[in-house]
Length: 116
Image (cartoon, rainbow, N blue to C red; front, side):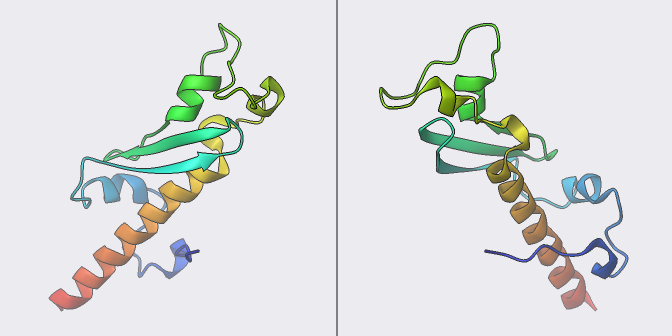
């Protein structure tokens, strides 16, 4: 899919606090992608905001509220499958956020190299 940058290989520009540094570099307020999620048996939208906070519509709609039992998105989706929702720690959510982080780091490095 893509290769994540190793923080030790980032020319010293990005340290442990790369998200806060990147917050000032991004030229977007919010970005999103829609995928099919097996855990909720429906399409979900993963949203990443400029401050790098994330939201998943599948988690919000089907598994986010523990006050009421999650309802299947479709008739063939069982509550057992909904129990597989990992929330915001989901592999898909993590993948999309890290993909964006990698793109922003590369874009910044290319911009810095072009300025020299």
